[in-house]
Image (cartoon, rainbow, N blue to C red):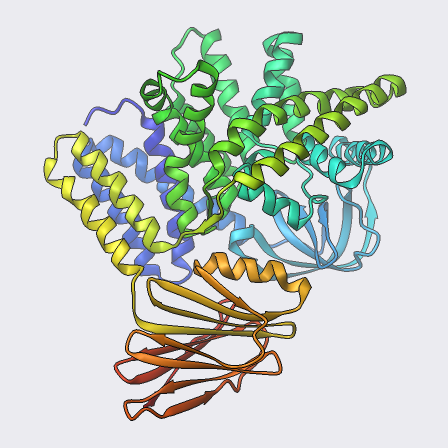
Length: 577
């Protein structure tokens, strides 16, 4: 095999090393098989020397992962306070995340402290947390650049609060400086429905805008230096780090008169970030950033050519939006599970407005010491955010609802993509595979055996009945639980809702007749009619909060399965009818 882009293999090898290390904790054999299988494929498709180089990168990935997570701090360490929340305080110790406990009352975000205490190993792999550090006493270190960045962010937040209301301030802080802490859950849900949640927080999209402005004003060198400071100021997010590395490679390639290869650039960015943070591949933001960028690199021009008949600006925006979804969609199906069908209208109409806010908001940061200029910029920001709120309101009215994806949809998409690649390389026999996958997917939506989900908590009681292609939801709830009801509706793809029913209801499902018994606005039991026409009652004894009970009727027998909504243990019981 002719290796034109070796960095792709090196990055993938390092990733396999990190992934194998994660698997080792559960099964040494499976972890070894994953690493060996990858190297086996490399060995039989490439030279021995290239295989040896890739094996070295796999080994480096394993070593890097273990050096990160199995580091033991001493009883006296310098720690950077990264995040202070009501329920936890997170610090960074020699590049590693730790939970700070004990004497943490007066800790400030961004402050570097010299702490004395004890370390307790408690690894949380997907967060990069190596354990708990119980602080007995500490003293503040001298103020440094990072701490001053935190202070400046707090200052600009305070200045905005004088001139903008809470929602507008939250939007500006999130768009311009990556501070999403002020956004309410309701606002985040709106942005998610519009498919622009990625743009609300600082990302590669924001950095590209900032860099272009800086390059125009000060040239390449100043643009790169100030862009790096912006990356640090906004919290060293994966997407901005990835974008910054790719920008530096692009500009450096022009200096040394080399052709820029975007695939190699994104591979190097992937490799560097994974080396710095070996746990990053477990974080959704990291994977979405790279998968969306990879989709743009590979398919943007192809989609753009197909949409040649559209005006140039619309074509560009739509091509970027669609290409970014190609690889992220299967990943979303396996992780986030919720997908916005309104992402096209959201990206087409809102991103241009966001771009203006990003530019103006960053000018506000530069003008913070000039009261008159800062006030003028805030007036402009106020009017821009009003425009965005109006656009949000209109777009939400016409935006289709969120859809719930899952593993089976993700597998179907992967099969379709795989078949496309095989057909492209002349394997025509794969043309039937997508049809089979889609057909199987649609058949899976048909519920042959009726399913009844019972969900009770303090202020909400609901039963979800799935049969054939129907999904009925019966629920009694207090007003403040309205959002939870909407989430359940989206999760189970409910197509009919009956609310606040104060008596029993009978549903005929396939070959069964089911009665849902409602007592004092609580669903207390179900009754299933047997072959003799008599109801057999099943009392819902366990009304624990955060629990869900599933009744499944199969060939005259009722199966019960109760499980924690947070992923607890499953228990299966069976009764004969």
